[in-house]
Image (tube, rainbow, N blue to C red):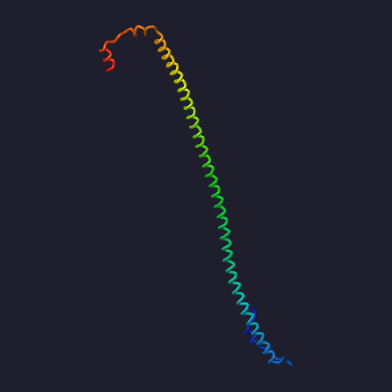
Length: 167
């Protein structure tokens, strides 16, 4: 156990033949007591300072651990967000591809339908043309026929003309 200033103060030395000067010894002991008290105070202050700094160190160590955990959680969260974004992007691309395929299929179906309609219209135009041609040829045949000549000899009376014009 270390000496206290009181231990030093109360220390009694035995007297011997031709011993030390008592006043010098007492003066020296007083100086040792003062210095020793000062060292003890400084030690106590330093111990308090070490305690305070240890508490701060523990506090900052806890903060560092918390920050490290937070950084890890943030990194994990960022990775998860990134993975989710990639999954969502893949789903969007897949949906867009499906829509594109559907649109292309619909466009091809419409193209085929329009092509069939065009072919049908061409066929109908050809039929119409040939019927119209046959009608015109029949009309020409009728015009070229001698049956028209006897109509020129036919005379209408006034009643018949009026009946034709009124209808």
